[in-house]
Length: 443
Image (cartoon, rainbow, N blue to C red; front, top):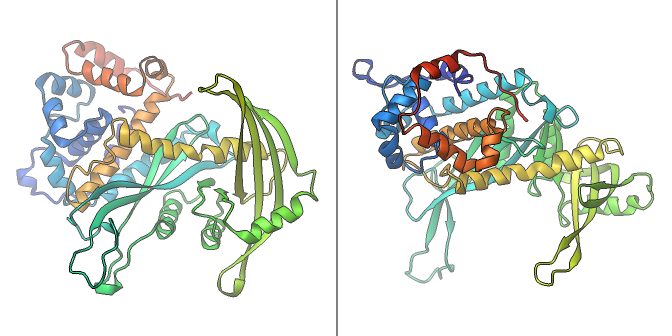
């Protein structure tokens, strides 16, 4: 964090501060660093952070590591600031940090066909029984009420976020951008509820602005195989690998089945770990879409059949398992690239889903709002994603990989947090260690 913090501080310093400068006790940059540390140390609420971080010994040790923290604020001070500032600037600071890592070639070894694999997926953040903000999405819960009845229909109000993350084949997931779904502007019946495909178009545009020349391989699930989304990827010169479900794009499936048996050379059998795999692909399938099918795009379809042996827990016998996967590829497939694109790229789209589980159930309080104010809630979300980025880099760094492997992720973070609560750190030793040059090296 000490190595990368200057990149964030430069961006945080550019955020306009709406507070009265004559009454300030804590600088905006201090509040931002405090907010990141709340999630780095995995406190589940503002009250929990107040109870521990503000203890004298904890505060003393933090100031040894972060001299910028001349004094630690109250959690409510951060809340009041997040209610008023442009919280999108927090995410811009995160983009600047990721760009800094990319320029330093931190992720070069994880490229797929010379592209950065970015997974995009949506997740519900939190649900409420009461409408506390007009931006919340809504859905009907319970049985549908008879129109002639006086009984009210029950609704649930929720926050849904479309996330983009760098998904590396070693399991490392680096948070990039978040796109909140919300009601569109308008009045009365003109207001429309947002959806994931609309949010994808906005998120794709933001990714292109943030990384205009970055070669990208998008990893998408079965919701996204449609013409406009694939055309957007082509317009941005992005590669993609998209899950193709059995019921999706019937014309493409029909063309695949009619041509696959006539192209025996477009196949590959191999062992990948304990799995026996058979790949079959068909290139250059024309997919027409749009009004009167006036637009068309060339797609490449690959199907992977695999088998492996496992132990049946009920009978204690060895049984053979089978699975089948299908993807749409933007790039023609061959025996030279099918393993890389499918096994090392497309299959690791699960990383973003795994990251959701980590953020929801392993310390990051993804499903906790932290504030019933739309702007502040988004601000806390961006700070949480920044903290997850720092913890992920620490987990996969050569310097700390042994600690995380020995103790486990949450226990290692808890060990570091508990160390800061006691009088075991020597100020001179800390200063000497921090003065040494440090280079982030990933496994």
